[in-house]
Amino acid sequence: MKRFLALFISIFLVCGLCSCKSDKKGNAAAKTTVTTAHMPTRAYEDVRLHSAANEIADGLFTGSLSDFSDEEKEMIRSYLLERNFKIKYNEDGTALLSRSEEEWLVSTKWVKNKYTEGVPEQTIGTITMSMESLKNEEAPEYIFMIKSSDDKNAYSEYKKALEEAGFKSIGGAAYEGDDVFEGIKDGEKHIRISLTGKGYILKIADLSAVQTNEK
Image (cartoon, rainbow, N blue to C red):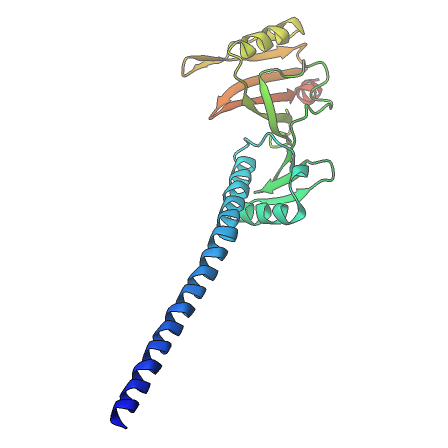
């Protein structure tokens, strides 16, 4: 009887251990499936969208926001909020980005308005953002953020186009070995191109208000 009881206990323990091992293997397999199937996708989406948000905030985004789904746009919005930016998406793939009472148009297009009339369309890179600045009431200006192109001659060629369009150079300054163009056309428009981290800032000021005040 004792031998039979001992044998029964041994068989019960062996079965129990096998069951535990099987359960652990099953759980491990399930966890492995979740990790390999889902985690890399989430990590990739987070990095990609976070990178897009940073490019928008830094004036380096050259894509179209229409390439993102509504869900992805909302995630980009959340990343921008972390940097105190608000964004309003437009149906044409552009957007309005705002912070500290400034509102930028996120678009790669050359804006045609009273400021750019008579100014050759820029060819020094890809426009990332633009805005009207009214900080100087006497000489309001329109500002373009431009990401540099790989063409080393683009700047000098555009500078030549400005001079041919009637902008007379009034000097400018050297910045890290590069020229900064500054010119005036017919006493009505003042243009200044300066360098930024990975591109240029192009400002076109309307001097008509200054002339009116002088008269």
